[in-house]
Length: 434
Ligand SMILES: *Cc1c(COP(=O)(O)O)cnc(C)c1O
Image 1: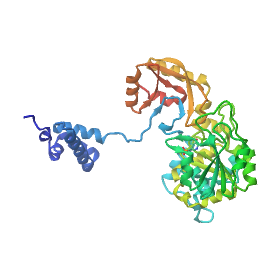
Image 2: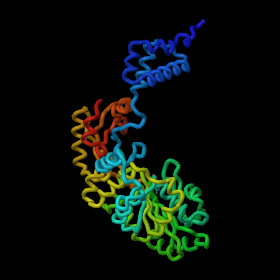
Image 3: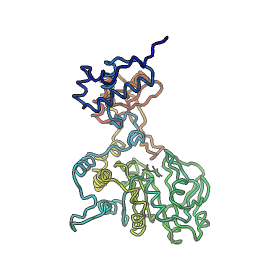
Image 4: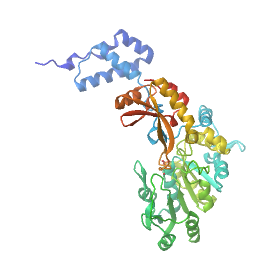
């Protein structure tokens, strides 16, 4: 008869009597160690693997010293706003403002002058007015929440006009038609996929129309025989009919950087007459996850008062990071230098190549030209000239790099591992070893 492996498993008590187990208890505490031993024994029982007491202790030690699940990684992909890797790294000013306000108590909802309750929305209003020219603004949990909230606050129970060319999916199942359903508004499609004219919108208005929604085609471009009305002309038509134009910019940006990043600015939408403009805090803006809404005082007030606002509100850590990031934008030079997303995009390729050369020399690789991208569904066609350290080793090496501490996420191109230096700082490079 084959041996029953389960009978070969030691008891919890027997394992805890091992000398090494005593040490684990000293380092991690009795309860966590006992739990880890139980977990290892449970797994062995399920898999039918016999283990000695010493092996169980070793397994428990692995469990107890396992790094946290959410960890820092080194982004060597060359994709600056990498959706899977946490999007925008924060500016030093944002990090220190988070630490400073979150380590203790803060004025989150306190009015210092009056000495009584205040609003968490008081912190960004003036900055958003200054940076976008809008009458008012607020932030919520993310841009998906901002769009949902704007639609719910203006159009619930009514119709929303949107061009067929803008019924898009952003990624991870975020589809504009689904958001509209959730907001309680009815979608009215206007025009065609490639061409929508002002007259198409004008014909679609009914007494039930509550808003016009314009959505930036973030992660794709329609080229060729295309047409869509100027934002200002569309906003004028909406205003004539007495309904707000909501402009979802997706990434959006605060600085006009036509030579670098061809994405619309929030200010341009405000000036064109959009009543509400929504954009992300952690795409090109380079701040924490957040959704920003700016617009007319009346429209923003409706958004702020909507019951969903409480459910979608921004948390204090993000608020601190966002305020510090927005403050950097008051001086454009300081913003491009201090906000990592902008600094990475703007760095001259010669400087990127110098970093790649130093890395290649140390790791025994070669320097190759590469193409970096903004990512995050922004400026999808933009190819940023870049340089990478190329290493032979393929999938096996890429897996080893992912297993290092901190893990390094590289790109594989034609069998070579590429470490794209546009998304690597000097400090990152020093941490990479083979
Ligand atoms: C990215 C994006 C969103 C969602 O923004 P999140 O900050 O990811 O929630 C909404 N609309 C457009 C057009 C986008 O590009």
